[in-house]
Length: 198
Length: 230
Image 1 (spheres, one colour):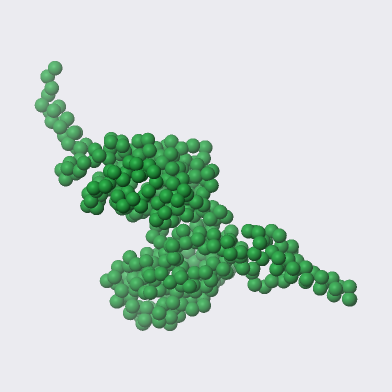
Image 2 (cartoon, helix red, strand yellow):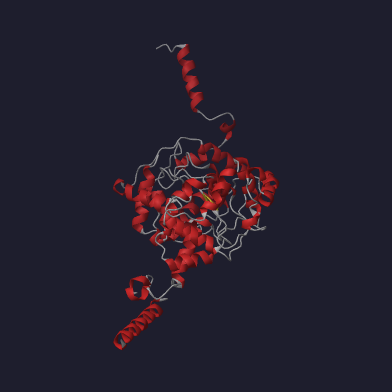
């Protein structure tokens, strides 16, 4: 079968268009996509990092490096990964992953979505639960160092809230307080709602 | 006549007993208070310590660990060092929807009167440094507006009501150290958010002509100056 020259040219253009830019070619993203998935959508316990707030990514990378983010999963997987990470390199990674398109995990309990939405937007003042929306935004898109939650996996969100209420990463104000105020049912509802958000 | 008097005395004593025993016990003392006690106490009961601490910590979830304010998707204002009378007025305005803010309505309308007063008092002694983040180059122009007003637009000096140090007094709020982005939004949206019940005009009316009269540039300048003040 004879391949036309124009066909090869088109194929080459497609490959170049999909790949990283010249500067980013040097970025060792494979060190991350090993666990976080080839398109950084997340895999198993490793969360989606595509489309995440870049300031948040930098802050968390440095928190892994200085061990302030100290839950067992982070200690096992991320402390080693960030041990020799410079702040400059952290910024480069953050910019790269923040720019990637993000797909919602949609793996929560769809029956709890409405309850989760109400909790997200209004909180529960009687039990001192803050309305997540004031910091994380109307579509859970995040803001600067406050993470995007929309579309993160149900299991990951649940585990983060559990970690804070168990006392890990105590410096991450105000999340330890927020996590402690939530009942297990509320955690289920929130994590479900957020997992579907685009 | 004596029968009536002794009945009234009995009621008064009962009310007094209920008021003193209800204080500092269960988390929701108003459930155990009989209706007769309501008329006796002009000042709302102070809440139990643990209940107050839980609510106070709750406020600080959004308003900053020392009440200095916090920048999330929305800027949450500084409450540290705020005039208690002003805080109380605002909480009541949120509850009565004279000041429109769905998040603050939610948190405020579950508070009973005693808690409202206690929280309003609770912030006045906090004194953290300003959160910062204002555009510093606008500060000199802002200082001028604060101290001299804008004569051409009939705007009096802010200092004349809010104090030279911008710490306010009685119903007039402290502005010193307030978040730049919060101040600009409030001044720009004054009549869309405040004084929303025409049947119940409130003190927000005083600020209306001032908020309207300032140009967006002047709002930015004065907000930058206020954000920098300790």
